[in-house]
Length: 185
Image (cartoon, rainbow, N blue to C red; front, side, top):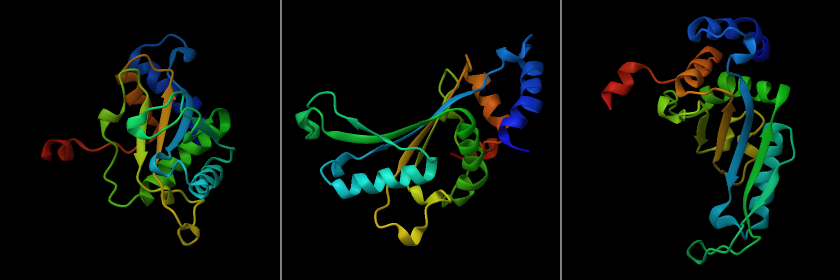
């Protein structure tokens, strides 16, 4: 069953039961997914920025936007208008498809992955995950990659509290760390 269908048929009813919502529209849902790559020290390297753009285009199926510095900061050696990142925002059906791919394919492909920490969900129920290597996504062939870069994925929800967001992510199948592993650290 697709993630969007699963949300509509099963997850909403479980959320209504747990939090006592009177209406289906009160249940939290995914709002958008933002994938961000900061180019940092490679900001002057045009080929690196092109590589990042192409990989984000493959991963998301959308054209990424270049983000530029709003003001010059001498400590970071940036000037106003300099390219500092590449970002893609996904909504709708593509968002659910990407999230399903993230849960079922990308997380298992991450080296030494032991689950997401619950602390990565903020107080308004949004989840932010960092990847050190973009080759965890199935669209990227490791043989074709000449430069590996990290990326950050922020999943925004309509949840009002952290507990609502955590429960939504658990019901969707996000792999959170087990209690025993938390107590070991």
